[in-house]
Image 1 (cartoon, rainbow, N blue to C red):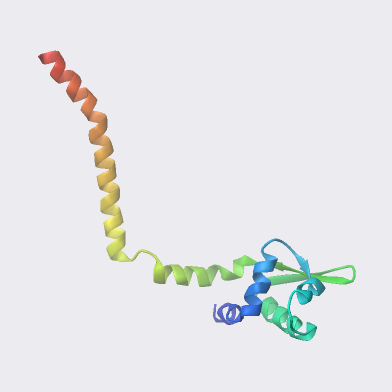
Image 2 (cartoon, one colour; image 1 turned 45 degrees about the vertical axis):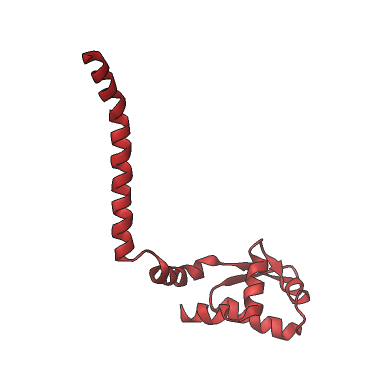
Length: 121
């Protein structure tokens, strides 16, 4: 997780990941999109590859990179634990769910009760 977090800490690498979201891209095309040297882009791609965030494969004379979002799973789970509903919210959400079901049940019963009252009158 630390390696992934370190990899996405750099804004250039985050931009590369966003570009790869739409599908594989050749390394040369990635390098053209940034105002930094090709060797610098190559180093960024190496960091992303070593962290598991991207995969590369050679196609003819090109090296194509593609996003591998599975590397984000552990980081996403950790963030969810920090920001997700805690025990207090879980209890409150459970209570809300119970109340919603109770209200629905009561509404389904009401037409039967009104019918019984009108028949006895």
